[in-house]
Image (cartoon, rainbow, N blue to C red; front, side, top):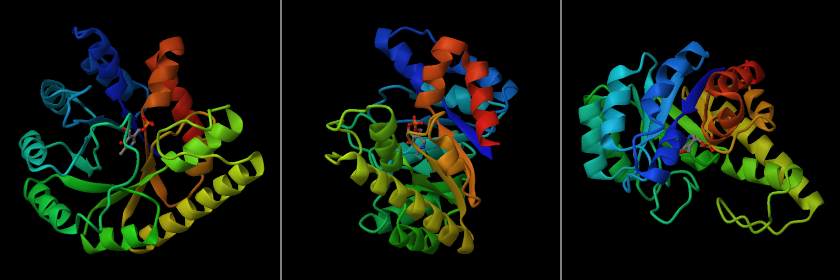
Length: 259
Ligand code: PXP
């Protein structure tokens, strides 16, 4: 299983003080030595963590391929084309959100996404679409001839956290759930089945399948066991653990779990 380490949260910590420490660039060598396969970053329109200078330096200096998450906003895509990361993952963006709360609506934004993919491919950037695990989104992604799809595992992860780590029912990211234990368990099993089924469908269609969002040391095996999923992009849980055990151990622990 390939592991993309999302290092945005190092920049989140830096921005809390608006100084230059910690520097996400310092993570590149550690990620590589610890067995990560890819560096993932998100250049958000509001530049709340990774800023243009970070993206430029990370892409230029990383020995690992860089997967740059971004919205389909024309100005952002122009920047991505000039930076030429290995891959661009197109994600929905909403200024008020705490994190990326759902997959890209490929149906409503079909024309804009098509134009964006064409432009990125002209600049030799591989393209992935971050989508919810549903059949229609897969079929539309296939029509758009993308290289990868990344399945949004946020709903699965949120349900898991409510069942097993006491996450509050009114937790507002991804969705609001007011379910009892039995209902949560049903929902969790249903979402795992759905992710499995959709991964199979996508792989049959010739799409490479990645997954990410909310994956951690407790829940990751339920997703990493799915044969068709080739890559996981994980940020929050790895950077959170690194505060206590260091980045190298946080990454090697995750690698051991998913391999
Ligand atoms: N993949 C994508 C497309 C994302 O937007 C994010 C969050 O930035 C992640 C993976 C990583 O999610 P997390 O930080 O919850 O592990």
